[in-house]
Image 1: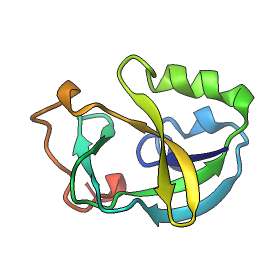
Image 2: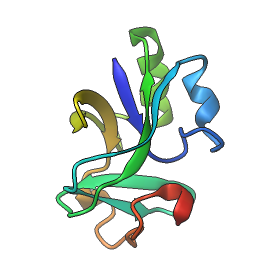
Image 3: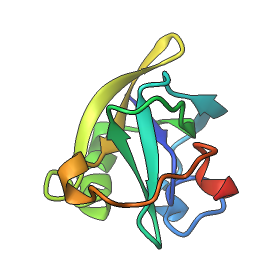
Image 4: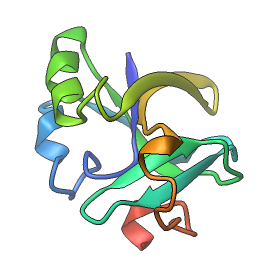
Length: 115
């Protein structure tokens, strides 16, 4: 399955090693402009209901890796793993319900690396 990563799981970020040897399929892709990327300090969160296209990368992830990634992202506790459309692909992504951070600052560029 494809996984869209937009924050600490991206290459060069602190959590990238969690992806192990999962191959990157595409870098610098964008979501549809219906989200917001918010800054929670040490990591970002993608929330539904905005007007922003968020930048990230697509990885091919095997089912065996999902429990480890879910634990890293605290899903389904804090984050929820959902399917979203990235170009012509359906990809899983970790989204934060807005009520968990209602007043968090928005990352205007939509790119965690350009915060």
